[in-house]
Image 1 (cartoon, rainbow, N blue to C red):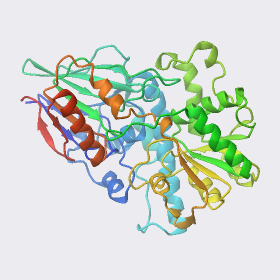
Image 2 (cartoon, helix red, strand yellow):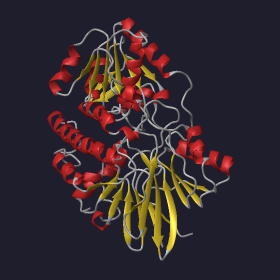
Image 3 (cartoon, helix red, strand yellow):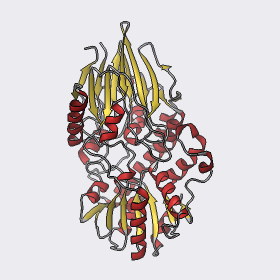
Image 4 (cartoon, rainbow, N blue to C red):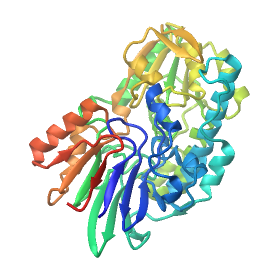
Amino acid sequence: MPKITFLGAAGTVTGSKYLVEADGKRLLVDCGLFEGSAELKQRNWERLPVDPSTIDWLLLTHAHIDHTGYIPRLVRDGFRGPIFCNPATHELCSLLLPDSAHLQEEDAQFAARKKYSTHKAPLPLYTVAESQTALSHFRDIACHDSCTISPQFTVRPHDAGHILGATWLELTVTENGKQTLVVFSGDLGRYDQPILKDPESPTRADYLLCESTYGDRDHPPGSVLDELADVINRTAKRGGAVVVPSFALDRAQMLMYYLHQLQLQQRIPQLPVYVDSPMAINITDMYVRHRADHDLKPQVLDDPFNAAEVHMTRSVEESKKINDVVSPCIIISASGMATGGRILHHLARRLPDSRSAVLLVGYQGEGTGGRALQEGAKYLKIHGEEVPVRAQVVNIGQLSAHAGKSELLRWLSGFQAPPRQTFLVHGEPVALSSLRDAIVKQYLWPVTIPAYKQTIDLSC
């Protein structure tokens, strides 16, 4: 009988991994890192309940690290099968996975030097070389086309509107001649946003896995341009810097697009903008190569992100020089939840300055530095030191790339008949419960919130 095991993003937002089994074959959908609290991150170091060498195929919804970042470890531990995704996701992973490995190597070396790790000899979860080995397993499949992976599994991807290349998946599982349709939402984007397409809605499924990141709330109303202009103008007037922890993928490009619009409209001063993320710079170039994955008009695509005085800083030396900038400026750097990367050095430099502002522009997971700032922390621990938070912290929820509660319900409205069972995943407990109650009330569907490592029969 076909079955599914929830190996991640069950009761939490990160670590997406769903193991589907049929006729003795195993397909893993997504393979993400756990991020956030120390307890969650410890799961990355635990062996999977299933031997990776017994997994036959891996299928990806999109490139975010909480959906792909465990892949090099999976390969290192014995997985030898192909990894299926669309070309944009493949190219993004070719940037994101080595970068993830590089950051882990750097963090391990830094922890060893500063002696703030609880481990005697801090090690990375995987190395850059291991990430490159993992990339040799990737195989491209096209969005909207049906792809037969094996006699047991056929997949058809659809636009999810979340990031470049993001898809939700129709997976047909066949066992003993009987077909079962399982829909994986992946991460769903928002409607009527610049750059990315609206998410397509599914019409049918026997079983549905739906993300619930914002299952308990909608994003605030109001104009993103107005909010950004207000923060930037007030901070510039004080003589401070606007520091933006930003996801290198999609969020950095969205910010650059909006800054360009504000400068064209002369609503903000011509401040220097430092995009201090080699990853974000490389991804920005991808928008020209993957035009089918977004809806930027050709005339806009020629120069959609080039605000005046943009400085793309790739090298470590260029990054360090930003610390010497004392005049008002805008710094966009990764990671988006302030869990690692160059943004930590900028926060250490600017958080104690009451003239500056930290702009939170996306979901901040439990246990992350971004969540601590969002919740009003007076100090933030960075590289083993307590950094005082005197800068203004502003959250702009309109910039989220995740569907809000009403948008999730809108996506579900496309079903012509209720699924046999809806599983809510990729959400924290309050969001999961709130979305479950809303679905039951509005659609009268059966809804389950699966537990971590729970296995469920798909033949009922």
